[in-house]
Structures are given as C-alpha cells and as structure tokens.
Image (tube, rainbow, N blue to C red; front, side, top):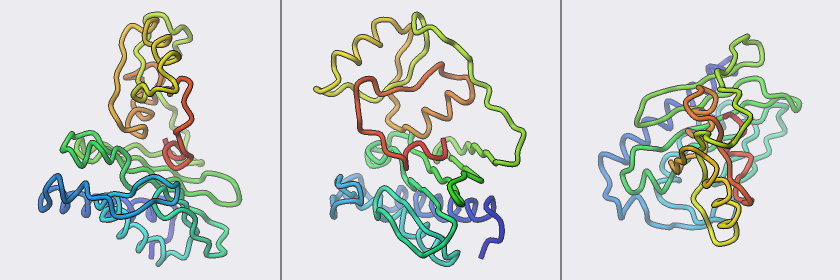
Length: 210
C-alpha cells in the first residue's frame, strides 16, 4: 500500500492509465460506449467508465480511504482521508477515439486538500499540486473577457443565451470536452479562462483536483 498522499494518487493513476490503454487498444467504439447502468450522480455509465474506474477503486480499497467518485458515488470507510476522483473525464471523447480525456484525483484529509493529481491520457502530461509545495500556477491573470481565449462546455438549450454572450466577446472559444484538461490549461496559462456560463452540470469530482 502506498504510504504517502502523492504515491497513493500516483498508484491510482497508473492503474487508470493501464486500463485506459487496454480498453482503447482492444475494444471497438461500440463496446467502449455501451451504457451499462447509472452512475452515482444519476447520469448514464458507459462500459469505458467502469473499466477505467474499477482498478482505481481496488487501489483505494487497499489503502482503506473514503472515495467520492462520479460513477460509484460515496464509499465511506470511516477514514479521515477521502480521495475525490474522476478516473475518466471526457468519456465521450474516449469512446469516440478523440484524444482528449483525463484523470483527476484529490486527496482530502480533515477537510483540507493535501495532494492533487491530473493527467491527460493521450498527451501523457501530468499536473501535480501539493499543500506543502511552493509551486504556483502560471495563469494569465487576464481580467477582461473582451478578446480573451476561453474554453467552455458545449452550449445547451438551457444556457444557449449565456453561452453566446460569452462567445461574442471572447477572442477565441474552444470546446474540448474534458473539464479536467481545460482547467489544467488555464493553470498553464495556455487558456485565459474555463467556464460553463449559465450551466449547472459541473460536479466536485470534475474540478476538485484541477
């Protein structure tokens, strides 16, 4: 069992990445995308979600920590430590074969985030943050929307007006389909901002680590 927050999250990522690569190399789009139930948040769970999440849950079970995940919901092991995970963010991209999907995990103890880890599967890039680290994000610090580079969730019927209002003022708009990756690109300074104007679809598992 991993003995530090950083090593536990690294072990969880290694398990997720192995499962992701195996699924992408051995399964068809239809097999990856088969709906096999509902997740802990009430949204459809695809086979790809379960295949990537299962080995991560095994790692966290051995560590005897609580888990909050998009698919299984809340697992209470009476621990002071909780790992908030989204093992596969950007499921629709992964199912389709679009190379924009990510892993996210945050380790929380007594209400404080001690360690966070995000990983872009296809790009093989990793972002880490630690409560004890002096590392600072390199955000652009842009304060004006006019001319900004903005990443957003796709427009939906309920937020179409707000989405368009942002898009009209922004200099460039991207819709990547992975909230974790998009938030990390903001931290890198590659994008000025990431938002879901007028929407309420984001969950804590999407953004806890990012």
